[in-house]
Length: 190
Image (cartoon, rainbow, N blue to C red; front, side, top):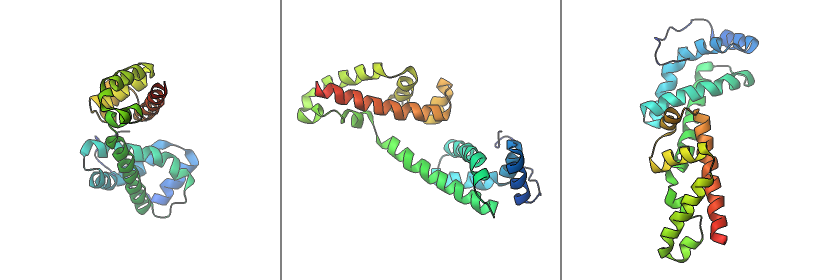
Protein backbone atom coordinates (compact mmCIF):
# COMPACT_ATOMS: atom_id res chain seq x y z
CA UNK A 1 0.00 0.00 0.00
CA UNK A 2 1.25 3.46 -0.77
CA UNK A 3 -0.35 5.92 1.62
CA UNK A 4 1.56 8.88 0.18
CA UNK A 5 0.27 8.76 -3.39
CA UNK A 6 -3.47 8.48 -2.84
CA UNK A 7 -5.76 11.18 -1.53
CA UNK A 8 -7.04 10.26 1.89
CA UNK A 9 -10.74 9.35 1.90
CA UNK A 10 -11.44 8.50 5.52
CA UNK A 11 -14.03 5.85 6.04
CA UNK A 12 -16.47 7.07 8.66
CA UNK A 13 -16.98 3.58 10.01
CA UNK A 14 -16.24 3.43 13.70
CA UNK A 15 -12.57 2.63 14.41
CA UNK A 16 -13.53 -0.16 16.80
CA UNK A 17 -15.64 -1.82 14.13
CA UNK A 18 -12.79 -1.65 11.63
CA UNK A 19 -10.35 -3.06 14.17
CA UNK A 20 -12.78 -5.86 14.94
CA UNK A 21 -13.22 -6.59 11.23
CA UNK A 22 -9.45 -6.70 10.76
CA UNK A 23 -8.96 -9.04 13.70
CA UNK A 24 -11.70 -11.34 12.44
CA UNK A 25 -10.66 -11.40 8.78
CA UNK A 26 -6.92 -10.75 8.96
CA UNK A 27 -7.41 -8.68 5.80
CA UNK A 28 -4.65 -6.07 5.73
CA UNK A 29 -6.66 -3.86 3.37
CA UNK A 30 -9.27 -3.44 6.14
CA UNK A 31 -6.51 -2.24 8.45
CA UNK A 32 -5.17 -0.09 5.61
CA UNK A 33 -8.42 1.83 5.41
CA UNK A 34 -8.25 2.59 9.14
CA UNK A 35 -4.56 3.48 8.88
CA UNK A 36 -5.25 5.86 5.99
CA UNK A 37 -7.65 7.75 8.18
CA UNK A 38 -4.75 8.70 10.48
CA UNK A 39 -1.79 8.67 8.09
CA UNK A 40 -1.44 12.47 8.17
CA UNK A 41 -1.26 12.38 11.97
CA UNK A 42 1.26 9.55 11.89
CA UNK A 43 3.39 11.26 9.24
CA UNK A 44 3.30 14.49 11.25
CA UNK A 45 4.54 12.70 14.36
CA UNK A 46 7.30 11.02 12.36
CA UNK A 47 8.36 14.28 10.74
CA UNK A 48 8.38 16.04 14.12
CA UNK A 49 10.72 13.46 15.63
CA UNK A 50 12.82 12.36 12.66
CA UNK A 51 13.16 15.78 10.96
CA UNK A 52 13.49 14.32 7.45
CA UNK A 53 10.69 13.73 4.94
CA UNK A 54 12.04 10.49 3.44
CA UNK A 55 12.94 9.05 6.83
CA UNK A 56 9.48 10.01 8.10
CA UNK A 57 7.85 8.27 5.11
CA UNK A 58 9.92 5.16 5.77
CA UNK A 59 8.84 5.29 9.41
CA UNK A 60 5.16 5.53 8.44
CA UNK A 61 5.53 2.35 6.42
CA UNK A 62 7.40 0.70 9.30
CA UNK A 63 4.61 1.70 11.67
CA UNK A 64 2.05 0.13 9.38
CA UNK A 65 4.09 -3.10 9.35
CA UNK A 66 4.13 -3.08 13.17
CA UNK A 67 0.43 -2.27 13.26
CA UNK A 68 -0.39 -5.39 11.23
CA UNK A 69 0.75 -7.53 14.17
CA UNK A 70 0.11 -5.26 17.14
CA UNK A 71 -3.50 -4.49 16.21
CA UNK A 72 -4.26 -8.20 16.62
CA UNK A 73 -2.60 -8.51 20.02
CA UNK A 74 -3.48 -5.30 21.86
CA UNK A 75 -6.81 -4.29 23.30
CA UNK A 76 -7.17 -0.89 21.63
CA UNK A 77 -9.88 1.38 23.01
CA UNK A 78 -9.03 4.68 21.26
CA UNK A 79 -7.26 3.91 17.99
CA UNK A 80 -6.24 7.52 17.30
CA UNK A 81 -4.50 7.90 20.69
CA UNK A 82 -3.03 4.42 20.51
CA UNK A 83 -1.58 4.88 17.01
CA UNK A 84 -0.16 8.27 18.06
CA UNK A 85 1.70 6.63 20.96
CA UNK A 86 2.80 3.74 18.71
CA UNK A 87 4.13 6.26 16.18
CA UNK A 88 5.95 8.31 18.79
CA UNK A 89 7.53 5.21 20.34
CA UNK A 90 8.52 3.88 16.93
CA UNK A 91 10.26 7.18 16.10
CA UNK A 92 12.01 7.30 19.45
CA UNK A 93 13.31 3.76 18.88
CA UNK A 94 14.49 4.77 15.41
CA UNK A 95 16.31 7.75 16.88
CA UNK A 96 17.95 5.58 19.52
CA UNK A 97 19.04 2.88 17.10
CA UNK A 98 19.89 5.39 14.37
CA UNK A 99 21.99 7.43 16.73
CA UNK A 100 23.92 4.34 17.71
CA UNK A 101 24.45 3.42 14.07
CA UNK A 102 25.44 6.96 13.04
CA UNK A 103 27.83 7.30 15.96
CA UNK A 104 29.71 4.15 15.03
CA UNK A 105 32.20 4.95 12.31
CA UNK A 106 34.78 2.63 10.79
CA UNK A 107 37.35 4.33 13.00
CA UNK A 108 35.35 3.09 15.97
CA UNK A 109 35.07 -0.38 14.46
CA UNK A 110 38.85 -0.36 14.15
CA UNK A 111 39.07 0.55 17.84
CA UNK A 112 37.89 -2.99 18.52
CA UNK A 113 41.42 -4.03 17.69
CA UNK A 114 43.55 -3.73 20.82
CA UNK A 115 46.76 -3.35 18.82
CA UNK A 116 45.61 0.09 17.68
CA UNK A 117 45.84 1.32 21.23
CA UNK A 118 49.43 0.15 21.71
CA UNK A 119 51.04 1.98 18.81
CA UNK A 120 49.56 4.69 16.66
CA UNK A 121 51.87 3.82 13.77
CA UNK A 122 49.91 0.59 13.26
CA UNK A 123 47.08 2.39 11.43
CA UNK A 124 48.20 0.98 8.08
CA UNK A 125 48.29 -2.53 9.53
CA UNK A 126 44.83 -1.97 11.02
CA UNK A 127 43.45 -0.83 7.66
CA UNK A 128 44.86 -3.93 6.00
CA UNK A 129 43.29 -6.09 8.70
CA UNK A 130 39.98 -4.29 8.15
CA UNK A 131 40.19 -4.95 4.40
CA UNK A 132 40.90 -8.64 5.01
CA UNK A 133 37.97 -8.87 7.41
CA UNK A 134 35.66 -7.06 4.96
CA UNK A 135 36.46 -9.79 2.42
CA UNK A 136 35.22 -12.41 4.88
CA UNK A 137 31.73 -10.86 5.14
CA UNK A 138 28.85 -12.24 3.12
CA UNK A 139 28.14 -10.35 -0.10
CA UNK A 140 25.08 -8.63 1.40
CA UNK A 141 26.93 -7.63 4.56
CA UNK A 142 29.96 -6.38 2.65
CA UNK A 143 27.88 -4.31 0.23
CA UNK A 144 25.63 -2.87 2.95
CA UNK A 145 28.50 -2.05 5.32
CA UNK A 146 30.43 -0.40 2.51
CA UNK A 147 27.46 1.70 1.39
CA UNK A 148 26.52 2.66 4.96
CA UNK A 149 29.94 3.50 6.41
CA UNK A 150 32.11 4.35 3.42
CA UNK A 151 29.57 6.00 1.14
CA UNK A 152 27.39 7.28 3.99
CA UNK A 153 24.11 6.08 2.47
CA UNK A 154 20.99 5.74 4.61
CA UNK A 155 19.07 2.47 4.92
CA UNK A 156 16.53 3.48 2.28
CA UNK A 157 19.22 4.46 -0.23
CA UNK A 158 21.00 1.15 0.34
CA UNK A 159 17.73 -0.74 -0.16
CA UNK A 160 17.10 1.20 -3.40
CA UNK A 161 20.62 0.57 -4.73
CA UNK A 162 20.83 -3.10 -3.77
CA UNK A 163 17.23 -4.26 -4.01
CA UNK A 164 17.43 -5.60 -0.43
CA UNK A 165 14.49 -4.98 1.91
CA UNK A 166 14.98 -2.40 4.68
CA UNK A 167 15.00 -5.19 7.25
CA UNK A 168 17.69 -7.05 5.29
CA UNK A 169 19.80 -3.88 5.06
CA UNK A 170 19.57 -3.30 8.82
CA UNK A 171 20.39 -6.94 9.47
CA UNK A 172 23.33 -6.97 7.05
CA UNK A 173 24.81 -3.84 8.65
CA UNK A 174 24.33 -5.08 12.20
CA UNK A 175 25.67 -8.58 11.49
CA UNK A 176 28.46 -7.24 9.28
CA UNK A 177 29.60 -4.86 12.01
CA UNK A 178 29.55 -7.69 14.56
CA UNK A 179 31.48 -9.99 12.22
CA UNK A 180 34.04 -7.27 11.56
CA UNK A 181 34.52 -6.81 15.30
CA UNK A 182 35.02 -10.55 15.82
CA UNK A 183 37.43 -10.81 12.89
CA UNK A 184 39.44 -7.77 13.97
CA UNK A 185 39.66 -9.07 17.52
CA UNK A 186 40.96 -12.43 16.23
CA UNK A 187 43.55 -10.65 14.08
CA UNK A 188 44.76 -8.60 17.04
CA UNK A 189 45.29 -11.76 19.11
CA UNK A 190 47.61 -13.28 16.51
